[in-house]
Image (cartoon, rainbow, N blue to C red):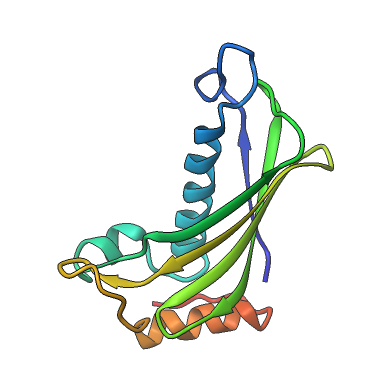
Length: 142
């Protein structure tokens, strides 16, 4: 199920040319993922990376930039989960403004033990919430 957040390009996101400096997009992409976990899966990154003793690092990201974004542009970041593995999750995030695609990102997250950095299976409640999202229903996990 698609999840969309809206952001406005700020001065802080732009480089000297007046367009979004590409590393700032990575921050926006991660913020979208964090919002999805908290709002749709019911598990914030603070909970996962704190009391749960786990982490959800990005293992792979591939981005295709198709058009520049400038200060004050309204952006929509739309996240779609694609595949759920034992400890991994593939996502696609499309960033648009006024119907024009600005970038498409394909990303793989891995659920790991924070102390060892080794992949561990998704906790059952979180796994079920992600699975519901893949089936087109809101996750609302724990």
